[in-house]
Length: 206
Image (cartoon, rainbow, N blue to C red):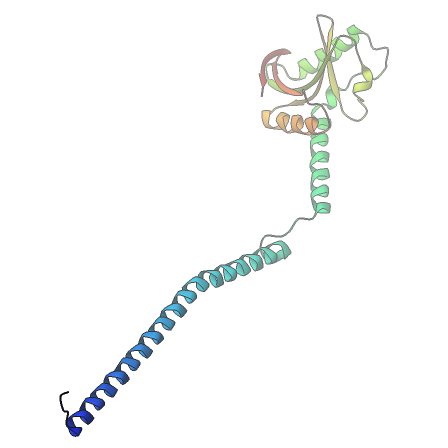
């Protein structure tokens, strides 16, 4: 067995201890690096969640202030009802003014000749002009109950034994279409706008 001097053995032992110490330090540094990397990964996953929550809170606050007069003024259902009522009154008033001269005899015994006389008087007042009216129905028999001329002036024309009920005499197509929309809302689904010149239908407007 080879003989090792005590001094050399001591040096070898110190070298071995130093090597162990450096190894432990390296392992410790490696562990710290792993922990730092793991923490960074967790942080990168949490950051989008935090940003998403912050964005959601911002959008929620914006919506809250918008619907509580923080942005565009909020219109309540009562306000909408009042606006709709006002618009309906405006449309009906325009009908009354436009048809003041076209009011016909409200008697249930009005015969075909009287109806045609009423139409003739309207034609005289609108000679050579394009007039728009809203037709709401065609029937084989006259039905006076459909229209009350005391509230809404109307026109009834007779063609091949059919009675055509029309409401409104307008100078502009836009006014007639506005009336048509209101009539559809209250149940006259088949209402349409037609244009006339000297009593002759020219066109049906969609």
